Image (cartoon, rainbow, N blue to C red; front, side, top):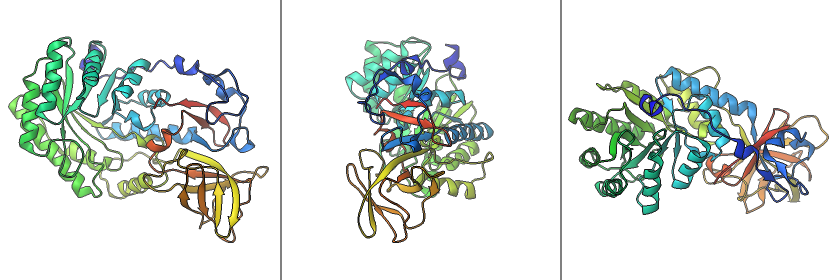
Length: 436
């Protein structure tokens, strides 16, 4: 109970179940013939990606960049009066949740009940379910979770009807008096996703939560990431703050500090600046929910971060976010002028937020990977092939390796049950297990 009431640090996770999992050659990314390999022993095999010890395509996470990103965000949030509840759906990797918790994560955010169950299984003690549960199974799972008085669950509501479903279930299965189902009213915008579309609607939802036994109005939430410009995000954040002030004035909040939360991946500067400028009579927990910062990317989020660096008034730690996630493939064929075919495709790498970027190339037996020369551009992806635009003077040959930077980490992670954690020389340091 002290953990929940104080908003204190989360305990580290229990990862023995992951380390003890047994793997074989049926696992994508492992060499044929492997059998009974303990996941926790991957880092002791002496494998190196560039030596050809593992089949390609292969998703790898550069450990040094991963740790620097985690430390950078920890310093950023601490230095600006914010906390982070990283979105677990990005990686669905409890080993990475544990790194984020070690670096001070306030909670882990999820989107589905299955993701909530993964968090609970591995020992996450505070979770934001960034959706409104509406089905019988989903609501029952939320109420079952808060029966554990050492576990705090926050979920969303964006309609009076949704609150009624939660309230009826809480009447049938009342949570412990000291551990209600904590609700954040979701504030939306016309043309966006879920969320109340008006101040009046949001206040009606807040009042419905306040009047329901077993539920507690814990704060307000929005997702600003669908806005393509900062002005739209600013308006949404202003709307959320306006409703929060009104709910505070009306006495609708529970006894805990009020949570104000936004997505905060590409626009976390706007979230921080707006929340820090707001003035409330009660303590506030200002929560970012970015998940993609941990591995960052080589396209959209990289561009968004450069805008933040140039525009923000917030305190930025030294260094910055850097791409940590790569997918490596072989040059399989150069069948015509201007085009090479590589052994990576839609089954292996994200393409929903832009095509991957060819970062490095390596010829087995040469020294180190070299930066990919200009003009090598991904033209198209098939299920298992990449069409790489290839200049006349390209050094690429059949059998060469190419390392790709990705966009939108979420939809690369979900294509891999196992990713390799590598050092700066692409020696394999361990395996990262996902639970999609």
